[in-house]
Image (cartoon, rainbow, N blue to C red; front, side):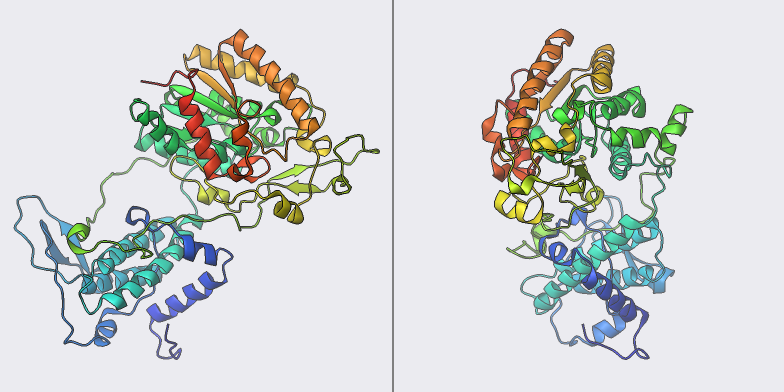
Length: 529
């Protein structure tokens, strides 16, 4: 971007420079620019543009203009924001509009977005900025390939998308109107808001996935839906309500107290493992929820709910260009969908603890297994709540490489792993399991428990022994109580490959897809029809 003297800079230029400085200094710059998902349906933006008159003055008036024809719309002038142009849809009986120059239209929307961003502070204001930038991107991308402006337009699309990323960040970080009282869990608060919004939009899901972070990362709802459709099932609505640190007590709270009867699904898949049922360890997540203000209000009868319903119709209706008649995306152009790579983002604050005994007794111990009570971080995801998709799933691309991973993080043998401390399959977590089983029975909701896979390097002799004990324990309870138990850890060794994990105990997107495939193929599950 060409630098200007501060005395000559317009508010749009100054705002653009401020955004670029903040954007370039952010930790996730390289990933976001290189791998950002660029689907028009998901665009939300931020701005920097040249005011219309100055922008147009830089372009030769002799350049050919390729106009496009827009049906059933009219251009209307508004006094708001310097009389920028909006496109307002009309009914199907309206006559065809005059042809529209997509380049000029893109500049108009970009200028309006920049003006609105000058004073944007709230989530709603940044959302309005985003709406204008969606239009700017769409119209700029609609400049035909044969137009002399095309090469310039392509660069402007990239610029607008960079601005989009900043506006999306601003909208995401602005205060939400939902549930200002927290349950002391960022993931739980985020997932709860998303689930209520999902129910309000799509309806109660046919299948609800619950469990800890292993479920959040480890079961892909949309892929499960596709695999089931390939087997002849109808299109099922599937939501992943996984919560970091969830135990049996947390799932019991989630199903029996947090959700009301109208928000319960037709089938529940509880995806997790041994950790969720070890009553010998401190249940920090559940204890934190119990001590929260949200839980106190819930006990007093005040339930979490979305803001009061407003109209589903926007006050301003925009008309996008017709892409099939204008432009077909080419490889590596911003119209192509890409994925965000989270594998290089720094770890978050979710930790596992290890303890050093007086003497080592494990035959698997190595010099690298002697550690104090320092926390060992295992989930390499930052800002996980912002990366969750519309179905509650968090996809991670990175693949687990033990030799590289353990150069950066300490190896912890099972004997020192806090998740297995005081290993005891009974007590409070067993009581919570019985509570969930009885509750789902009373609601005629089939319950399926899936023991998710762990990587080969994670399953040392201590953990393997605990897994075998857990398998027998769950099998017995499944027979006695009439729920389904699937062990993808001990009896699906092909799922234990490192390529399916991003750390020793959490599946990546490929592992989550493989689990979805195995679930769809499981004969023991009675899927809703």
